[in-house]
Each structure stands twice: as C-alpha cells, then as structure tokens.
Length: 394
Image (cartoon, rainbow, N blue to C red; front, side, top):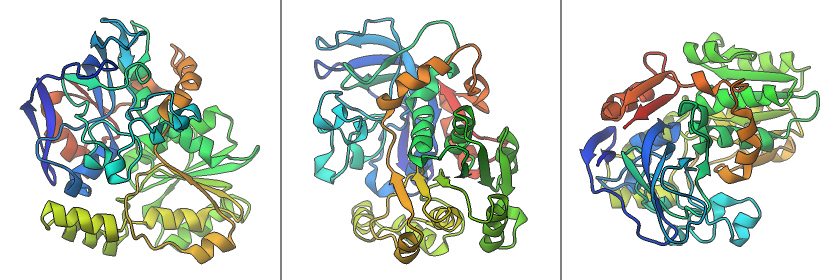
C-alpha cells in the first residue's frame, strides 16, 4: 500500500509499505478514505525527530471503511464506516473507566514512561503505524472506532478523530464561568474549533489571538487581536485586559504548544538537537529538553488572577523553566493533556447534522491526494496559500 513515511527533519515521502493485517483478536483493518494533517504531525516533522525511525508511517486522523475484524471485535462488520480516535485505548481498564483514555493501562507505553499508544507518533507512543496511508491496522477495535452513518461527506465526521474532541476538551478544561470570557492563543485548527465550540456552548466573550491574517479572518464571531499590531507583549496584554474589565480573561486556551514564535533560546536548543545522532538527541530531549514557551508565558500573563489555563497545544520538554512565583501568586489553575477522545464523542455526534453548527463541512482549507503529502507538510509548516486544515485522500 501507499503511505506517508518519515525519513528525517522536514523529509516525508510517499512510499510503498507492507499492507496491514490482523495481528491480535481485538484488531480491525480499515480502508482509509480521508486522513487529516495535524499540527501535531508538524512536531514530528520539525522537533521530535530524535524519537522517530526512518520509514515510520505518519498520521492519526482517519475515517474509512472496515475491511476485516478480529474475532473479539463484536460490534464492527466489514463495510461499516468508522472514525478512528488518535489514541489507542481498551475502554475497560481503571483509567478508561474514569474517562482517561489517553492514560489507558492496557496500551500505556511503559518502556518510555508514556501514556496510551498513539497512531503514527514516534517510539515515545509505541511506534504504531499511522493513518496517512491507504489502509490502517486498528488495535483495540472493540472500543476505539466510532461508527458513523453513510451519506454525508467524510469531512462531516473526520474531525471526531482529533480536532473536535481536542477542542471540546480544551474548552471543558478552561471551565469558563457563566457570563465569563475566554481567550484562545493560536487560531490554527484546534484554536479555531475551540472558539466555535465555546461560542456554541454560550461563552459570552471569546477572544482569538494570532498573527496569521488568514487565521484571524476565519475566526467568525470572535473578537480578534493581531499579534503583529502590537510593539510588545505588554501592549497586547494591556489591550486584552482593558477589553475584559481590567482583569484579563477568566480562562485562556493555549492551542499553540512547543513551537511557539518568540522563544529563540529553546528554538536554538531544538535545532542543535536536530544535528545530533538520534540516540544522543533523544537522551538530551528526555533529560534537558526545553519547549518554546512563548505562548504559555503569554497565557500566564493574560489570564486573570484566580483564572484557568487549558493547555491543548503539545509540549514535550523535560526541563522547561516556569514562572512559579507568578503561577502561585496569581492562583492560576492549569489543566492539560491529550484529549480523551471517546469521553467526548457522544456529546459531539449530535452536532454533526445537516445544520452543521460547528461548520465542519467547510472547515478544511485544502483537500489533496495522499501523493501530495510532502507538499502538504511544507505548505502547512510555512503557513502558505491560506492553509489552515489539510485533508488528504488516499
């Protein structure tokens, strides 16, 4: 089959790889009909290369048709249309019973000290072949896949794999009080969808902050602040505080993560690590790795005293310096983590109707064939051609 494979920093290729097959009785194999390109994929493209192996298959946002199921997958049949969550969870362990599917005790990658295995996301999360491919082996298929109806286009349901539950959890963790305000840092796919979900749920004030004109223009119904319109972060913070009664927003969603603009020291460390042999670089990252923390520092500065910061952008540093004095003094609550997809899908599915209140049918800016994946990654990395969300079709 054809699949998108990793071969080094900023080097992805579309190659022939072995077809997946049933390996465990709880497996299924699906034929992928659409697959998303996620901001998290760019972290592998740029920062987390030390944990990758040449030839690893990328991707974790698939929708497709079931081709084959193992004997312990009672609720799926060949021909079913399914969305597959990005994490692999059993649905019945102690963690899963508490809705913490990204901490699944059946699939935890204990050798790396990591949580549940993820599709297409490095040895830190199990080196599971990913979903930017013609076919996908789905472990724990007795729980993970979400059956969706035939008829509507793939884009109607595709984002159940990651974007929708990640944004839903970001807003839930922000815990905006009635009549309160929410600032969203970064209006990429997760940030933009977080704004839409917050507005749909009745959050009174939603503020979006970014520096890409196309992203600012897509933020419908949101009060936007353009980072490039301010000479300093202090000016931006002052403007947002002034618009929120002088206190700052009640909650902030950081939808940017480790590759934020404006963190030159951490960026330099990441670039140096990229020049080392992969085994050395991995050890450096795990012991002394640092994220680019500009977005998190901005969130800490912005949020009102006693407010909440919800982190949905991916962070992976082991030695990040945090302003603990400010966090403690302002009495800030932090909530974070990979989205527990199946915890939220039942609440989201009723919104994926013909009325399309979240605008999923037109959410993608680009649809490309799988063979154009190298171009899609470059375009997404450099924010070219108005790109916000890319969907690829095998």
